[in-house]
Length: 513
Image (cartoon, rainbow, N blue to C red):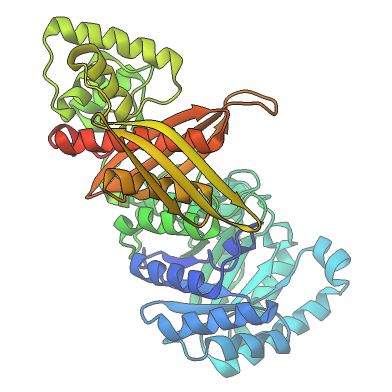
């Protein structure tokens, strides 16, 4: 039996079914092209019968993807199958994926059909699919809660009717690894026909076991795994593609299987899916989370700085992340702090370093996150006494339903008061444009967020911005009971940090923490 594991990505179908994760046609195509670049074997592009939009997006993907099979999902009825084929027929290698539930609970309450009726439906639907293509996948929905004898019967009927891939889904994430692996093993022992097809698994994560169940199935003979980027999907999601693939790669000694994926494309693909769905990846998510290669504990930082393998089981570059991330905070030690100062080009005497480290720890007790700018400010104020280049003198802004937003700004630029007026799409846009006009540069606004410092109608707003210009990054913060004034202060603060970085390119070579 081959040790190659086919990766069937269902981000665009099952992943999109997660609440709030719908994508339009162009977004779906963009994700599909990135999945092709990643090297997945099969892209399940959607459920064509679900809507006109889903049909069109599947058709668009089928026409544009050349190096992956493109699958369309259909229920086990002729209308669904015809619609699926119409959507995928132009693909370089189209696949019809049809399914019906086989568990007693689904037969009784959802389908309201007998086992004999379901077997007849399987035969008819798979046979009809096989008239269009010899690439037919059949799924026994809720397989892990299906009576095993009936599961065997269903699979035999499907294979005889023309199915070339048989999928065993843990539809509600009910199974555990020993049980799920046992089901796959019993299929090989009791259904001779299984040896002539690809056996696939599709695991949900309701108990947090989707990847573990998938790995158990692989060890018992499954050779296709259905998964999603970032583990998106119904309820608690699906088996996470990145976790499964890297488990096979990192622990190949215990999982002697391979995939054809270019793992360096995992992180870019994860970021894209997060961007188009609007669903952020949790910080502690394995492989692609913000903290996956981050270290804050002093002991860990010291070890990683000496030899990364002390606390990292894989190189972040293997999944497309440029480097690990030493997070400076109250748990950080002298080694990490000194390393960061060295990165910025600061050379302090032992005495000054001790003073700086004490100030750093004091700052950590006050702030949850420590950014580059905090360190720059700390060092500058303590040892260099640098002043701001720009200081906000005044800001006036008008906007409303019948008024075009306009802002007037007065900024002290190196001792000279300069005024500018600009209009924009909204009050913040007008303010930022006016400030940019004063300082003579128009940076890209990379992020903008507002948080309430206190409660109540008179709460103080704290605005955080990050900007980019000429490959230099800078952050800024501002606070005021007026969110427009707070925004102007934050933007000015960021521009000061940006100018300082440009004036100190060696120190600014590190582009953010």
